[in-house]
Image (tube, rainbow, N blue to C red; front, side, top):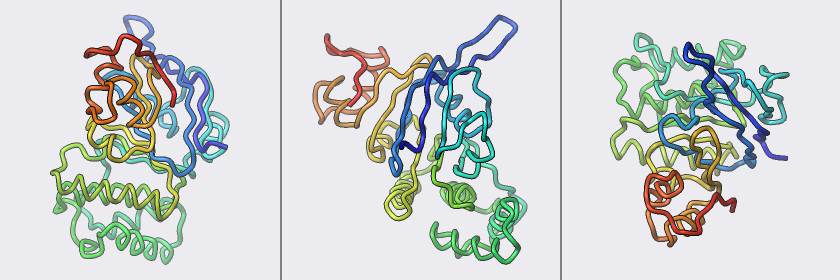
Length: 260
């Protein structure tokens, strides 16, 4: 059974100018322990889809389950099963890393003792131990991003949603975050649902890529398969394949959406 499954998932926004179909019917399955790269140009529906799957935005059509919990009928079950790291993060700059992690644990109804212990476990796993008594305002971009992820892992979720997790990070911090994502999958079996505009990141991290455009899935496959299909060679860049898939660059004459 897939850990994420959607059928016709859709979201329409009502505006003064009329309805806007942000997501037009997403059919998707994600396997347990998979790192899925969810790609698309700006306005393609990536973040809207992610926000629906994390219960932050109700769908206006279709259905979905996350870890066996129905998105509409059991949103609390979905939230217990997933962690979410938003683009902007959410730490309080005025408190310490330890206080932030313990507070997060208490919000998940851990006892004070359990929350303190879980904070120390997360700090060790994410290389934050030496920073526990530092105020969040004093953290570097990479350190703050690791804290964001630690907070999302407080309740040991089966699925971790990462929305543009390395935006603004230097190359070293990006590499560290890539290693962390791989460790979460390899050591804990965590399923990772990743949106990113960095195509080298998607190529390096993802077991499978799904490309959306205009609210619909237009390609689905491994990075190598999509590069071969749309750019003509597995040695081509993912950027060339992406531009061909989304109609923003040259495409082979026989190219068409393909699942691999």
